[in-house]
Length: 534
Ligand code: F6P
Image 1: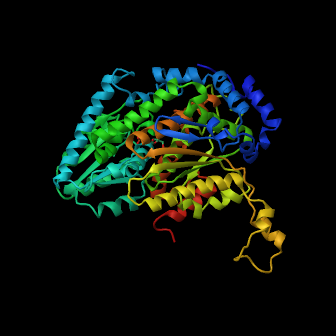
Image 2: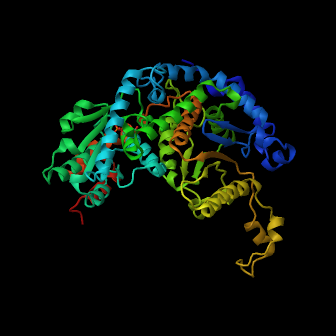
Image 3: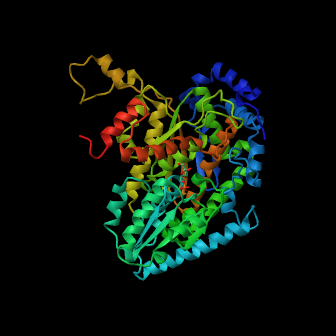
C-alpha cells in the first residue's frame, strides 16, 4: 500500500507554487469573461448526474496538477485494491466492499452471499407491503443510529414519490426516550413492524430503544417474532434478543456505507423490490464510472480533488450542502457522517501525524429555507464556504410554478455568490428600508457583496431511485478520493470510542452519585444532574 505523504509529492509542490503564483487570487468573474467555453470545460455528465464545476476557483493548470497528485498519492491503485476486496481498512484489517452490494451477481466478490441476502430481504419487503395493503400492518419503525439510521432515514423521504401509500415509516435513533415515547404512543403494536438495525447489535442507543419497544410490544401480549426483525451482522445476539427473522451483512460493509445492505430494509419496504434494485443499479453505474472513466472526466475523482484543493490550499474549513429538494432534507446529515466520520482523522495509515488538514465540516439545509437562515453568512461573512447546490429538473408534483421558483432561487444564489455587488453598484440603488440618517458610503459598504464565492451545482433529471443511488455513490467515491490523497484510513472510526467508554463508566456513577476521582467539572455537573439534586 502506498505510504507516500501527499505534501511531499512533486504535484503538491507544484500546486503550492501555482497557488502562490496567483491561483489564490483566481477571480471567477474574470475567468468567465476571458473564456466563453469555461462552462463546457468545467462541467460534465456522469451517470445520472450532471455537474457544473465552472463556478469553482480552479483553472486548467490546477486541475491537471490535482490529477497528477492523485496518481502520485496512489489513489488509482487504492481504488483498484478497494474494488478487488483487499483489506484497505488497515486498522481493522477489513476489506471495503460496499460496491459489491450493488454489483450484478458475478461482477464483484461475495456475489452469492450478497444476492442471497438481497433476494431474501426484498421478498420479505414485498410481504410486508402486501400485509400493509391488506390493512394488517400500518407502521414500520426502524431502530438504529449512525449508519444504521441516516441512510434509510434520508432515502425514504427522498423517494416518497415511489412509496407505498398507507404504510408509514418511522426512524428512531436517539437514546433520548422522548423520541421513542412520542412515537409508540401513536402506534398500534398489532399493526406495527419493528426493525432493529445494528451492525454490531451492541450499540447502546439502539439496544436501549429496542428494549423499550420490546416491553411496549409484549405488554399487549403479541407474538414478538411476528413483529420484530433485525438487520445485523451479529445474528446470534439478535436471536438472544428474541428475533428470529434476521437479514445479515458482513464486516466488510462499513456502517456509513451500509444502506445498500440489509440496513436498507426500510427503504425496500417503502419503495418495493424493483425500485430498490434501481437504487442499487444507479450506485453501480457510478461505481463503474469511478473505476473506468478517464481521470479528467471522472466526476468523483474531480470532486474529491477539488475538496483537497479547497481544504489544503485555499484553507476553506467547511462545505455547505444545499439540496433544493425537500425530500433531501436529511442529505446534509447523511453526508456529515459519510465525510466527517470517514476523513475526520489526524494521522495517516501508518499512524504518523498528518501535516495537512483533513475533513472539512459539512453542514446545510434544503433550499430555499437556508436562504432565510445562514445564506447571509455565505454571501457577506468573513469566511469563504464553498456551496454545493443539488437541483432536480423534474419534480414529482404537478406544481410547475412552485418548481420554477425553487430552481430560480437556486440559480440566483449561485450567481449572487459568484457575481457579488460592488459598493458603487450598491450606492446607485435605492434602499428604502435603510436608515435615512446613515451616511451613503457606510450604507453602500453594508450593501455590497465581495462575490467570487465558489459553488458546485449537481443536477439530476428527476429524483428517481436510480439517480439517488448514483448521487450517493458519487459522494462515497469523492470521500474515498480525498481520504486517499491524505493517506488516511477512511473506513475506521476510532474517534467515537473514547466517549463510549467514558459513558459506560459514568452511567453507574450517575446512578450512584459517585464522583470520586472525577475532574472538577464532570463531578460538579454529575451532582447537579442527579434526580434528587436540589
Ligand atoms: O458512531 C459510531 C458507529 O460505529 C457508526 O460508524 C455506525 O454507523 C454506528 O455507530 C452504529 O453502529 P451499529 O450499526 O453497530 O449499531
